[in-house]
Image (cartoon, rainbow, N blue to C red):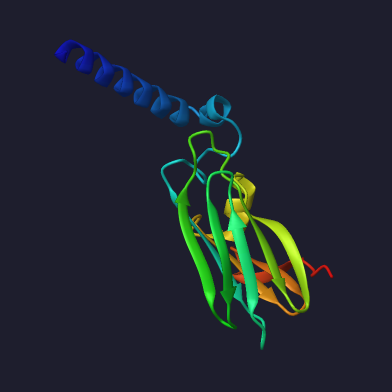
Length: 155
């Protein structure tokens, strides 16, 4: 019994060593698919924020991934919904959201497991901020901390 446990520990350690070597050689992305690397990895905890920036209206928010349905939330003005997660081992964790209010609706990907998305839009590579306003849905741009209009409302 002890021999089997020791063998399992050795296998795990060898796998971790292999991952460390591939990552240090820049082969981590080739071994595990696009989206991994220094900016996205399965150990980092990511946070997505949806902020109701509407002046006088409630915003209905429904977000989910393939594994987790976060339910429907009604946010009053200036209220925020936030959730945190770790990327799955395949590096494919994607969250999508449906936002709606009396002025329109929109469906979009709130977290995309791609290096470009995380670097451009997530503060400190971990916090991604979305804000609903009267003219559409905005996403913060990390380098200047300003919101960019990403989606106009659909009727």
